[in-house]
Image 1 (cartoon, rainbow, N blue to C red):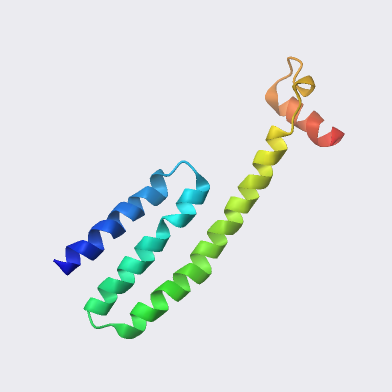
Image 2 (image 1 turned 180 degrees about the vertical axis):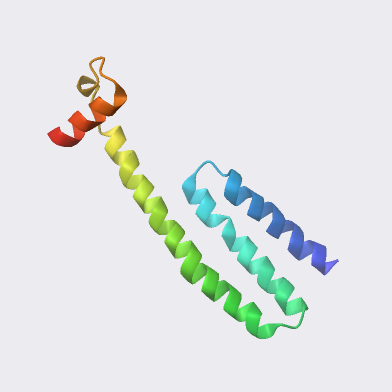
Length: 103
């Protein structure tokens, strides 16, 4: 019973990491995965691994994923800052180059 209570939300959250459209939601969904996996490790009697697992994963994977999300945010701001005058029937790549030169 306890195994299914901990493993089901972990599996659903793990799937939602890949299926989430919003990058911020993709960052938040691993939190239940880390919590439930630590609970499963505690049930197995692996206390040390249950304490180390979230520290390593939250410290390494989640922080690097947040860095990637911040980099995407910069790119989204640059693309959104294009004015309509930059397009003028040009192919998108040329319009982006013009916008980078002008800003």
